Image (cartoon, rainbow, N blue to C red; front, side, top):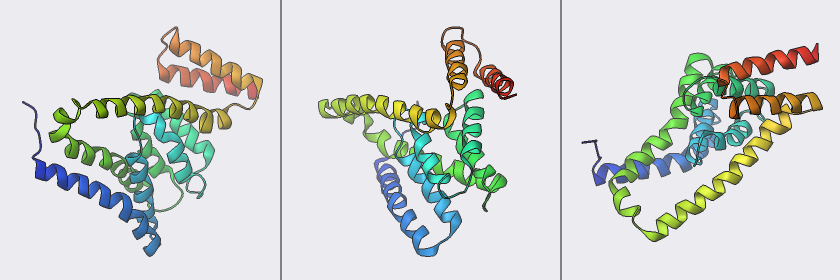
Length: 208
């Protein structure tokens, strides 16, 4: 039998989730502490994601690129690397924290960002689990989840366009490489890591 937290623990987790969501931005603004600001932005990104890690991509880009913490090219390079290896896309946050030019970075920054982006999911899971059996039987909850799932499709398309399309497709050759990569992944089931390598080689050959 799996572990199910008690109702008191669940309610405490939901309360802590809400407190951190609203208190961290206020604390970061009040103190001007970069570490708190970093945790706040990654926690918020992890809190607002539903339907897959790709939805978080625009949120993360807006959190780290405009402030100058990491360049857009480095951001997209890390995203491509995260796509090429197994595991959830949220691990991309560890790369961002480690690669940032501002302190904390390195292993400490990577650990902080990874913890901050996963913490909301953990708190929500603990908070909802004791009530889930009752909630999922409600017609209103089922309808709401269907609506959210439909909206996620639009969010995924938006994430494909910005930042991936707008930052990565600048010419006909870029579009051709993108199309071939899509075909390799979809129809020929080529491993993602190999597609990334082939795409890099093709882009270098075209640029050379």
